[in-house]
Image 1: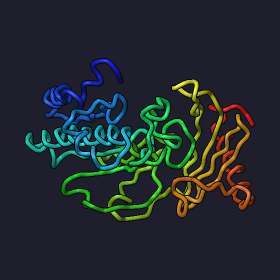
Image 2: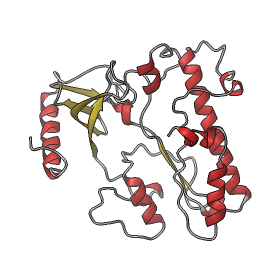
Image 3: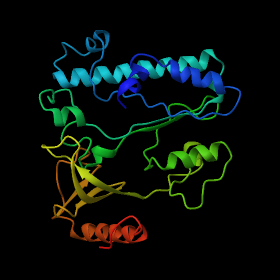
Image 4: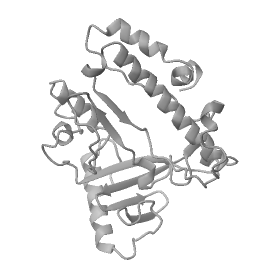
Amino acid sequence: MGGVGTDIGRVTNQPVFDFIEKNRDNPFFIWYAPQLPHYPFDAQEKYTKLYEGRGFSKSAVLYYANCTWFDDAVGELIKYFKTNSLYKNTLFIYVNDNGWEQEPDQEFFYDPIRSHNGGDKGKLSIYDQSFRTPIIFSWKNHIKSSVRKPVLIHSTDIPATILDYVGLMRPKDYDGVSYKDVIEGKKNGERSLIIGNSNKIRDNKDPMGRDVETYWIRNKEWFFNWNITDKTKSLYNVNTDPFCNNDQTIENPDIITLFLTTIKQWRNEKKEFFKTL
């Protein structure tokens, strides 16, 4: 993040290739995390011109161009694996670090807080869109391609899944669960809900956000947010309102009570990390 690290993907993937060459005779793990499509939005003209003249906002053009730049960087990485006879013996996993908001008509270019974080429902905000991201598993001749599963999965499940694929046991005290059998169609996803905690929230005066204590729950129907610091609660039906525009706390007091109880129980189980309510 920053410095020469920004060059990964933007300027060169050579450090990644050098690592592979040194380790190709042994099992290896690579966390490939270029600072793309993250700021700075400095994609070359060959990328920006793909989106110019289509009625998109300036911030959308720059962000989408960075996304395409990332696509090319990953494509170069995949090509390297294929041309060096490593592709068929490698499990590839994609996950984003946070959700983002940038519709084609939204203009954030002149608003640094929003352009750097992705709109009001992007990074450092507490909506389903703030956290939701696809997770992709790909392994030639091991995982069937083009299969989509609308199951709940947490990023902590990724290490557990990797360990399962390579035949190693996950630590007993690790929260993540393996999705290997889910990926291979042998069972459905195990998670009925995901609980999260955030200690930062968007602040127009500070690009890094301000300190808060807030919790959220996502199940297959609802996204619930409880901001203890600001004394606010919100509830959205993600099936009918995926962008979390219509708060339904007043109409669903029983669901609110259930989610509050669930969070308090979870918080108590993790009391070594949180203060007692």
